[in-house]
Amino acid sequence: MSEAFYSSARIYDLLFPGGGPAVAFYRSQARGRGGSVLELGCGTGHKLIPIAADGHPCVGLDSSTDMLVEARRKADEQGVTAEWVQGDMRAFDLGRTFDLVLIPANSLLHLHTTEDLVSCFRTVRRHLAPGGRLVLDVFNPSVRLLAGADGVRRNRESLTFQDPERGRVRVDVAETYDALDQVTRGTWHFSTQEEPDFLVVPLALRSIFPQELPVLLSLGGLRLLDRFGDWSGAPFTGDAPVQVCVCVA
Image (cartoon, rainbow, N blue to C red):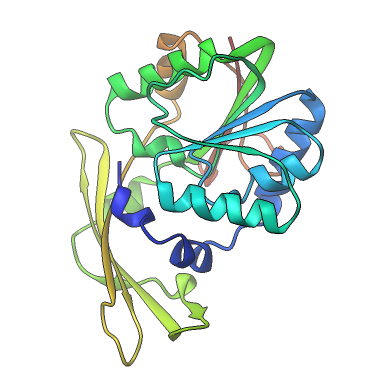
């Protein structure tokens, strides 16, 4: 887990402002299922607050207190009711089941070992109501990008953002890839012209390749029902940037 990366909810929301087609997709999944929704790795509520605003009973679980505080603040500000719970997606017990469980935005990739991933899926299965579904998305690993993770610090121009307190913030990332563990370990540098490296945090994410995902799900008592290559529901292909997966028990 990369707790330090999520230690500032304000910076996270400036870096990843949310919205867009992913939110629309998850809202449509909730409308299609009806009933209650649980999101694992809910962060500051980018996905769950809009779903709760649609009238679904919602619970968001995250390991970061700072992210949950911000999620609660934003929900209250918008007049949206949801329950926010601190917990570990690998092992939790909420004492109830849900019609839909979500693990969006690569949250699953914070689990680096097969044991942790299977434990998460088994825990999800115990929290699925009869006929319930798990919907998740993870990167589709690019061998070219993984091979280029050479530890050199490089600017990520697409991640540049404007901070009302600091001004323009530049983001540099240095990454290496451990092929044995399938984990990319990076160091993220946040800088302004006046304040170089005002925040330096690690982030480690596992790669889950398309052929291994159904096996991991099966070990956790789940089955891959559908897999899409984008948020419009296009068929999944080998060069798709994302794996959008619908799973059942």
